[in-house]
Amino acid sequence: MALGLSILIFLAGVVAWIVGKHYVWRLRRSAARRGARRRKTRPDGLPYPPTGMGICSECEKAGLEVFHLPSGRCLCKDCYARIEGFSNDGADSGANGDATNGPASGPADNAHRSRT
Image 1 (tube, rainbow, N blue to C red):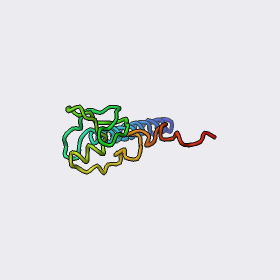
Image 2: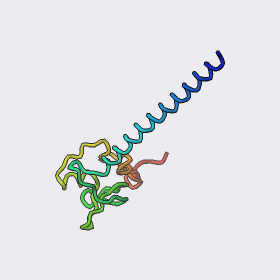
Image 3: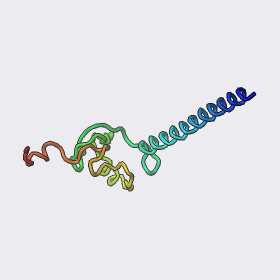
Image 4: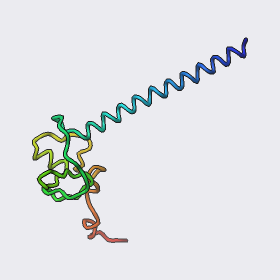
C-alpha cells in the first residue's frame, strides 16, 4: 500500500514537472514571436523594408542591419526613422554600435592608436 502510494506521488510529480515545463516553453515561444514581430514592423504597423549588411546613404555608417529601399538607397534604422518621420526609441536602435548596426568604430578609426 505504501509502495503504491509512493509510486503514485512520484508519477504525479513527473506529470506536474512536464506540464510546468510545457507551460514555460509556450510562454517563451510567444514572447519570442512578439519580439520578432516587433523587430519586423514599424511603429505604425507597416513592415520594414528588406535589410542586410551595407552602408547608410545618409550618415555613411556601415551596419549589419541596413534597410535596402526600392529606390536603391540604403538607410540605417535611425536615418530611416528620421526620414520616414516616426520615433525610433526602441532598445535595438543601433545608434551606439550594438549588435544591430555593428561596431561603432572600425579598424580604420583605430589606426591612430598605438599597438603596444
